Amino acid sequence: MPEPLQDLTAAGVSIWLDDLSRQLLTTGALRRLVEDRHVVGITSNPTIFANAIGGGDHYADQIRELGQRGTPTAEVLRLLTVADIRGACDVLRPVYDATDSVDGRVSIEVDPRLAHDTDQAIAEAGELWRLVDRPNLFVKIPATQAGLPAIAQCLAEGISINVTLIFSLQRYAAVIEAFLDGMERARAAGRDLSTLTSVASFFVSRVDTEIDKRLDQIGTPKAVALKGKAAIANARLAYEHYERVFAGDRWAELLAAGAHPQRPLWASTGVKDPSYDDTRYVVDLVANGVVNTMPQATLAAVADHGTVGGDTIRPHYPEAHHVLHDIAAIGVDYDDVVDLLEAEGIKKFEASWALVTAQLSDRLRSTPETFQRSQSAAL
Image (tube, rainbow, N blue to C red; front, side, top):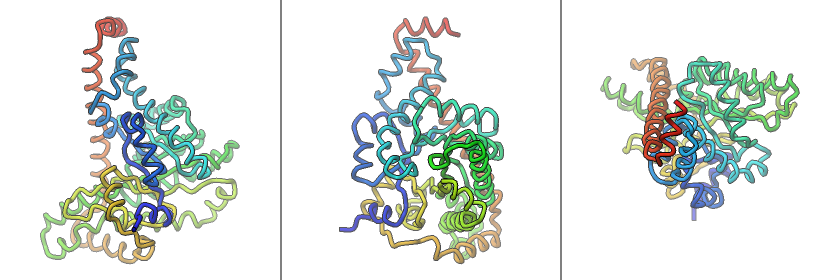
């Protein structure tokens, strides 16, 4: 019988799960995914935690305990998420050890409201690194203009980073530059580069969603024929740039010092358009040395009917260049698309953070009166 997940792993793709909750941890479901579904990493984000914390009673005991201490809502939220991340890190620790610290990683994101504040993002990344206190942690920092120097500084300080919300090829090039800068500074400071790693999370499906909408508005047969092609072409060209940079002399010096490359990570791999094959953002982006982080539905779809046919990136570089050229020629402004997607991505995460904060505040108000008195005293 075909085993697509095993085939992906054999092709050099690291399968990560784009989901995390207390339920996944306490029921043993995460451990089973690691053992049975080739999952070797975890990503989380504010929306994932909003859904997890707001969706059940698995956090009730910890919320009650923290509430009785009079812990402020913002700190309660941070402690809940840190507990889940720490638990996931412990489940994935054997993978981390077995893969020379490359996989077995679990990601937690800085407060999305800090996306445009370099200094505060650096400070929070350091605090999360200390709170989780696990070597297989990734701290997620968005690839905004303000995020780029934060990424470099955190790496220089020895904090492994998952760079998130990358949509454009130009910004991806800047992210790699920030990675190289941070790693060179870490080397100069005498840090062990063999355990200091990074991934660059290049978002996929949202690119098709926005560009397809604009192609529909143009409405010509040529425009319609380009639908569903932009996102995969964009990601393939990102990998082309990755290959170019990590074959260069600058990287060779870091490699000689024990560093691992900053791997491309395909994020937003759940299909948004139901007319598209639900495995396309996985099986069409296969190459050695990439990460694909999948929501559970996509992971299940790939396991059930995904077809893994070897490298589906490198042979398609010329086609990918043509696709982006044709999309621009027909009148779709690539720069406008990626700028919009970055701004929307930050807003969505901010909204999720605000929602889960409000939900927690309501739940804390419903805890025993002893909490309400202590909370009032703390204000």
